Image (cartoon, rainbow, N blue to C red; front, side):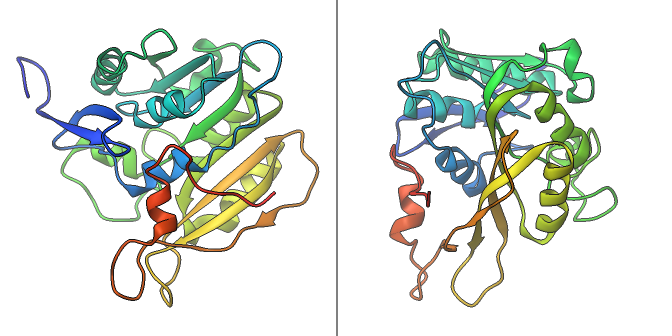
Length: 258
């Protein structure tokens, strides 16, 4: 669909039709990494006293936040932040269409000035799918919106992690999906900012191929010590999706090692 002054969009189904999402035809779109990130979040908040607050940092059109709202009733408030106003508008429309506007909302803002958007220590859970490519690396995109999602042109990895460290409450958890080749830099950045890596899982296209992305869970104020979980393979030897990968698209999400 399109309108005057608006980008052309498609309407797509997520999580086996449980959600519908308007997203730009050209620009950042939901992919497998998006779904894997949402499915990697653990339920560490159900049964806790009071509400639990989550943030999707760099939310684009809101897919991860909406999936979390469906998976976890214990999350009483889920916010999303993105620097691109048109994506924020679409995200709020997506929340309304899926009947989640009472728990999920999105705002436009710059994470490099995060204290102007949210007070420190506002969230128990933060999820983020940050740009994978450092400035000057990776393939160039003709879409400015897509380039901002893929490359560190509007924020660096360190700036994003610093914002998360500011916003997380003590013992709050951060979940990231990131380029596997940059795992060492990611882990050192997290530790330096006081977010201790606790779990990681490498994702491979299939057996015998190098990992493409990595899923990481970090804990604010946690002690050193990280579980390296078994690898996740997207395809089996016949080229079909593995059952474990498909579980990410279901409500239960990925199993985790504890």
